[in-house]
Image 1 (cartoon, helix red, strand yellow):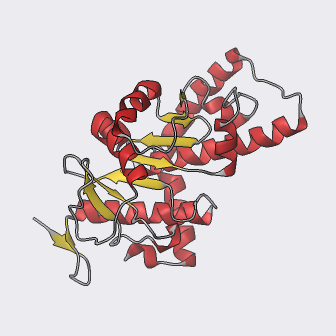
Image 2 (cartoon, rainbow, N blue to C red):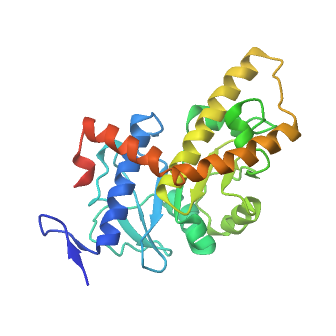
Amino acid sequence: MATQRKDDSFPCTDEEWKARQDLAACYRIFDHLGWGESIYNHISVKVPGEDDTFLINPFGLLYDEVTASNLVKIDVEGNNVGPSQYMVNKAGFTQHAYFHEHLGERAAAICHVHTTATMAVCSHKDGLVPTNFYACNFQDQIGYHDFEGVTVRAEEGERLVENLGNHSILMLRNHGPVVMDKTIPGMFVKMWALQRACEIQVATLGMGNPQVVPQEVVDVHQRDLSVMQSQGGAGVFDFEAWKRKIDRIDTSWRD
């Protein structure tokens, strides 16, 4: 049975409304952290309790204009199945829809960014190198996909999934990363750590002669990190803290 917003103008389930608010919050957090790219790039999430539908940003809006109610609900064919009258950027739909459709809950939440640091690392022949704390988090846990131009052709989807493998991050070479997780908080904290890893790598390589962490140390680091991460609820604490931050700035994302 459908429930409605406080002003009774937006019928949807409680689960969908929570997903809408969390996704809108995520857009505002990305904007606050400087991870936006004009009206481009995307964060999407599967609609809870529904098959093959997900929420994505309206094409033409900046990240700080995204709200819970203006997010676009579409199916994997690109059809607008919700109340929003906005269109969706085809490049964003093609990539995200294929991951959502073929990876299920493993890719319930997905982001794709063009931050300077992550694009720089995607454009480096060695990709992400274990030269810093955060980079060690991701050693041997990232897939790479060679650049094929703007992602608007559905047939590229199969290669994207193949190159992702059993990982949750796909570095699109010469382009930018795709980060996914079962939840929005999990995806967010993974993206935050990846951004830091890339920022530090760019700074380190700029000095020359980087100190690469040995694989045996990386293995210990990842083992111990997995234990510590379980205490934070896969990014829940991080995400809630940032929601409080953006609430202090502007609460319109909740509408």
